[in-house]
Image (cartoon, rainbow, N blue to C red; front, top):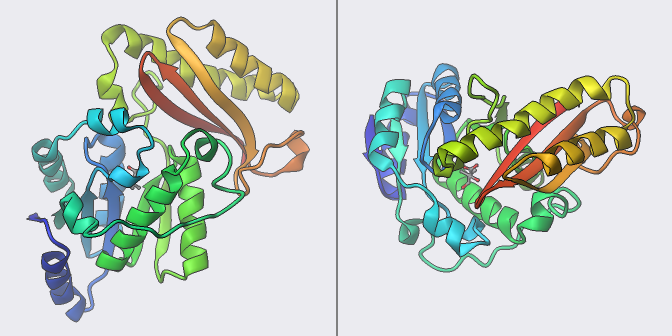
Length: 281
Ligand code: PAF
């Protein structure tokens, strides 16, 4: 595996592959890689001739500077994992490389980006679209891979690709969980042992709500999740929304959609965790 730090070097290496008619896949990441990322990278390796994995903590998507400062940075360990997964390139640019000048572009995909994370993290998806579009322009991948844990991000990126006509395929990949159910996240590394135990209640509640939903209304299921999280020690619910998986708008009845998803954000101590579950698809 080659580790490259500049767009110029990456493009030179990819041009040689493209000249031989090879396909290129991209997995954008912010590093602190775990088995969830590994599953994306392995799929990218399997479906393309060469897999590029970007490792870049993108400052423009952090509306909370403290969160940016605390975001784990583990490039050496990340590169070891990427090598094991069979990636051809780790692309680890500096902030100056990706943002030689301030990015003033505005991306707006309302109503997808005005709800949930868009409401609680103003500017977050604008920053995500800034960096992801720059990566698409730099790498020009045939396919790009994103996890379903960031369910809203995936929907917004699909919409950006559709509207801006990026000639590539977006591949959404299922959430990877710890054996006990906790969704894998780079932020889990910041949980104390006690918080790690408390955080388990998030996925447990979502799984229980899927059974509960079979014989209860949307409003009852909403209350079931809210009550369970609010009663759980160490957790603070930011939001839980039952939405249509395509439009991300709230549903009132199960019959409103054939694709119902519950999206949740919970603070466990200082750590903000997200998860989601499909009720109907
Ligand atoms: O999902 C992430 O880790 C980030 O939002 C992404 C897509 C790598 C953009 O920085």
